[in-house]
Length: 275
Image (cartoon, rainbow, N blue to C red):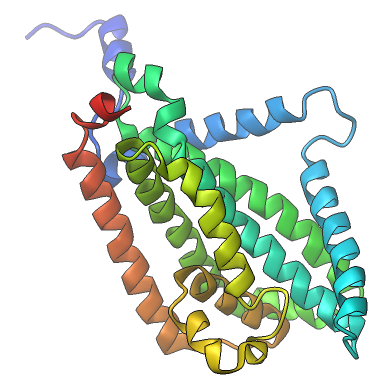
């Protein structure tokens, strides 16, 4: 039996990962995560603060909006309101940007979809990683800043945030895939998404408490974007964690991820034609 040469062994080890499902996502995790990180580095190249600008700009926006809205709404406790508003806007940023980026994802990657051998799930994973990295940098800055006002936020973050944050992350992935497929199939969908997101933002208890909706609070109950946002904010601010409900959400989001991966695999030959 002939012993394989070292060069042959190297070629075998360098064989690219193939597939379209979760196993492929795991095998290529370093590739799509690093590719997303390079996008962040390129975005802030030659700046002094680098990616810290994402957290700083978010913090400044929250501070200005908090002062303005607390004055207009005559909030009795402005500091707590700014914390409430800040976490809501930061988490909403992940959900809204995932939706917007997803709606144009395959259209912008048209040449790569048509000419490259990479499966469509790779681009979804890369976009998901980029949105998560952006969110984490903004979230950490605002959490540290608010902890100076309320140190209990750090304790709540350590004790209660993990399961709601996992659900939020999984939700953002299958939302990206869903929006990407709809955006590829229907060309007007990308134009419609900003309008829908603006309407959803206004009817979601982000700028105001849920009780402010009155009889229209049912809108929050059937708003999937708010249902992904609220548990994270409640866990941070109030230390509230409905473990049973979060496990149910984990099952739903897990099913959403599986369906998203299945849809990408089933549509892998149609997507290049749609875009």
